[in-house]
Image (cartoon, rainbow, N blue to C red; front, side, top):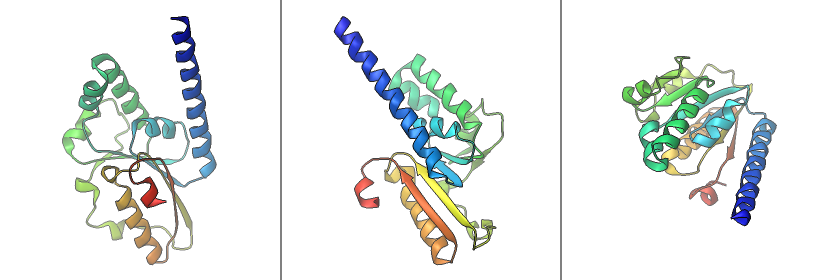
Length: 178
């Protein structure tokens, strides 16, 4: 029992050290916009005082309580929704998902179906000579929208915008993307 406790303490210490490294790594990237789509990266990004966008694809409360149980899931939901209130924008697929983020008092939630805005070319009001650094922090999988973000950055670069994309994360698409 004592040995298991020591192993647990070592594990917690290692996790804290990893989170501190991730915060330091994110701050060191000096990105203009941080794009996040994952519980841990949303929490870490909420500690950084920069422009932040989070992508919420599903019902957080249902997912967390299903995966972690009612008590831990509810706690994760509260923490996640409160951290989202520090973001400049939270994108969600449906009004139902937006309405589920009930503790977010900042009204920074925008519903964009399929995460594609038909008039996106009219939304670009950035001078072409200004450098824009975008950081994506999250799991590298198709459902997190990484391919769409890469396509958008390629489109901006092809139209002579000075854009740099920084990708932090791991996942099934990690080797294909890097």
